[in-house]
Structures are given as C-alpha cells and as structure tokens.
Length: 316
Image (cartoon, rainbow, N blue to C red):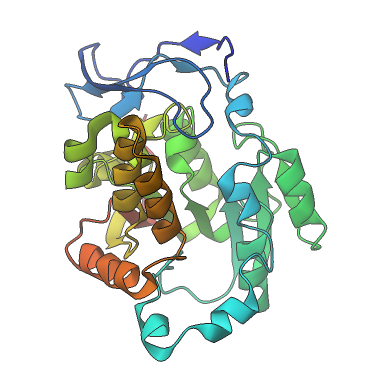
C-alpha cells in the first residue's frame, strides 16, 4: 500500500534541550503503508520517541477497521469451545493479561476500549465502567453492549461527571501523541489515591537490542513512544503518578513474531507462516505457553504492565 503521510518532527515531551540520537529506523510492517520512521533517544532523559511521525489528524489511517486490537476486543471473540478443550496444564500456563492492582470495584475508565470485551468483563465484576475509543466502528460495537463510550481521542474527551477509582489502558500509552499531557489529564480525572494500570511494550528488553527494526513491538508509526521501566517511571512521576509495581507478561509473541519478521525479510515464507501459527496458538501450544512463562519470569517478554498511584500535584 502506498500513501503520502503528513509528518511532524517533535521535541522531547519532558522538556529536555534538543539533543537526540537516532536509534533505529523502521517501517510499517503491519499494513505495509509506505514510509520510513526514525526512532530517536533523548540524550537528556533517555525517552525514545518516533520522530518524524504522522500528525494527529493523519494517524487514523494507520488503524483500519481490521486492526487486530479492534477485532480481538469483541465480546465472545475467543471461542468457549476452544477454551473448554484446554487441558489442566494449558489452563495453568495461560498467559496473564490485563493484570490489575488490588482495588475494590468502583468507577473505571478504559482508554482504548475497542469493542468492549474488557468493559464487559469488569461490569460483570461489579464495576461502573466507561470507555474511550478512537475507532468509530469498534466504539459503536462497545456502545451496543450498553456501556457509555466516548468515540474520539483522549485529548478531545470531556471531563467525567465523577472521578475514577481505576483507569486502565492496554497497549495504549505508546500510541498517544502527548503522553505527558494525557497522563496529567488522567490525574485530574482520578479520585484521590486512584490507580492507573497501563500495559506497554518494554523497549529495555533484550529483544529490541537483538531485532532492532524487526522487533515486533516497535510497530512504527503507530507506536509514537517506546518506554523502558526507567523512562516510564520518569514520565509517571512528572505527571503526578508513583510507579508501584511492574508486571512482565508471560506472553512469548513478541519474540516469535520478531523472528517471523526476519524470516519474511529473507523470503522464508513457510517458516514465517509456521511462526504465525505458533503465535496464534495453532501449533506447539504447550511449548509456546511454557516459553511465555519462562520469558515472563526472566522479565524478558518485551511486554509489561505498570501499576501507578495518584500521589501529588503534577509538576509544571
């Protein structure tokens, strides 16, 4: 697919003096939209960002309706028959996803709620849920479940009627054009002592060093920022949040699909196809689950969930 993108160069959102180092240059491997996108590291704070990047008005075309997170967040997406066929070992090895801090049911907002599966799950557990979704198609599907969902960007979303006890975002923060400003906005929306649970790729993982531009979780140009534990802690602290815990996912798909990217580059079509089947759980299911547990225990899966708590007025 070819297209002309509206691109912008951006400075470090932490306010550091201009002093960047190009780390890697990638391209859109997911949808094949043309263009090259450098990832730079701020020498001041270490935060990685994609620059130049698509503008806020142009980014939506990198998210077609067939974008994976939209299609996999529909209620009932995973077949109950498939779940019933899993043995005891498979159930024990099932990857932990959307891990939450210890907070009793209250008011919850999900940023990037997709078609509403997580909203539905939490509502069934007694939470009063609201969602925010950029995709009109996915957001309308969540609305059809009966949940209040604002369709549009976080930047454009109006203030809530009451503060939230918990705000979650599963692989969302790295997609935001202004994560510092948006985390401050979420601080304003949170109740005193409120919790934040955000999952992000771990750009400090060995995978990134090994695979570079072929690292599956690089996902430029959709991923505008690339966090390590250290830079996530800095950004959260600047915006009024204290990082309390980091939970590494026991999911091996970053590693498997990064190998797949390299195989595709070399024209190894059959191997790439088999790796995709493994990532989707259609081949070597137990081995995949065991690999995920190993990577998670070693903090090497390249995916992590950050638990943070609202503690103080964000710094200017």
